[in-house]
Amino acid sequence: MNRRPEGNLYNFAYLDENTKRMIRRAILKAVAVPGHQTPFSSREMPMPYGWGTGGIQVTAAVIGPDDTLKVIDQGSDDTTNAVSIRGFFAKTAGVAVSARTEEASIIQTRHRIPETPLREGQIMVYQVPLPEPLRQLEPRETETRTLHGLNEYGLMHVKLYEDIAKHGQIAASYDYPVMVNDRYIMSPSPIPRFDNPKLDHSPALQLFGAGREKRIYAIPPYTKVKSLDFEDYPFTVQSWNERCAICGAENSYLDELVIDDQGGRLFVCSDSDFCRKRAEAGPKGASRA
Amino acid sequence: MTDQTYSPGLKEPVFDSQAIFRAALSALSLPALKFKLSADRLPQQAPLPPLAAGLALTLLDFDSPAWLSPSWSKAAGWLAFHNGVKPAAPGAASFILAAGLTELPALEQLSPGDERCPERSATVIVNCPRAENELPVYAEGPGLKRPRLLPPSGLSSAFVRFWQANHARYPLGLDLIALNGDGLWALPRSAKLSAEPERRAV
Image (spheres, chains in turn orange, green):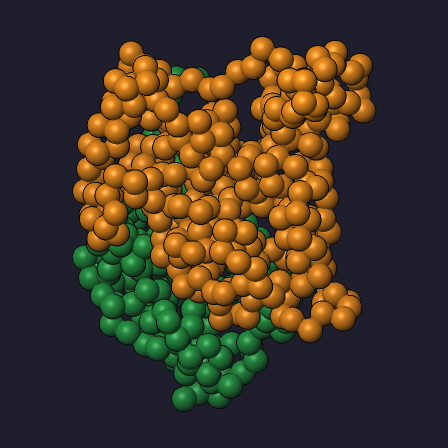
């Protein structure tokens, strides 16, 4: 059986084998120390930084001919970034692609974790722009590494406290810092804090790749992931008064759409696969337009 | 040099190494669970047992110096020929390949990484072919929904002490991949071993 896709002049999944081996070693170490940012020698990819070069390299090192790949951007399978990354792997690896969360063995994502619960054996690959949660508080890499090494996270707690003092709440709606396995503070990539609870004890393996910053980190399945908070200011997620205009979902993450210049607006699910499935199955939600 | 120095490596390097890596990744993500690999993915004429040979070609190269235990030292030429693997002293090696638990160097001889770079610790690949353990041992930690009994692989109380000392240094420490018959299982340094699973509120 010829498993190379026809007309593909690249190596399987684009990267050469030496590069894959290097990334694979980094991934294994990242899994062994959950939440620790493992350096790797990130390669130039045929797309600009910021478009998911880290996630793509992780996916390329992990993916095989039997995998089914799903790629989402802001929860949607149909945005430019998601379509081009899916096309990239369909071309260079010839793997099956799917928009259905339950069919996918590897899900590369930017900004969202699917609403459909994940299962054991699935791999989530996150595209991470800024892997260092302490970077806004301490610009020097040598210092942040030392702080992680010494488990010295006072800076972060002061920052969260100042948020509460200024705004009355912890003012981070996405990329909300988490504590992994009671040891490392980790940036969960720009997912909304709505998705943070899905990180905790997820049955899926979660891999994070930052291409420009050359870091890989991971959360193994069934690992404790706690969103940082205070006893008197517990962690909360966003909620909406509206329901999805397409499928009527009340408990999914909603995007706001402006539909005219009269102030009309609609709320729809950000997870397009979840929304489609619900819309096909049940009665539609009331449109608030 | 032996007759086997130039013996073949992986039949389909791209796809075989991917399958072997995924087994290793699954094993480290779900500790103490054995993942099987089919024999046709593995080099059968190498100077190492097929599983060790396949895993070595999947993970090791010129960037990852390796230490080979005495019974496996004859494979150094084969690893250099295929992947450019350089030999190293135990303390400087990123991979420790051992033919048996008794051939492992003492824990303090191996690199546990340092606080800033815990990823620089050694990965131990050890052959554990036996089919029973001296005592039941449970693993707990990330990747384990509930405590899991280690697969029978000839483990002794000495090994449990070795691993407990290793785990005590977390986040520093070794990661271990055990080769057992037709498959492999793993213990990341985050895994805690005990003779009895801790009682846990459900």
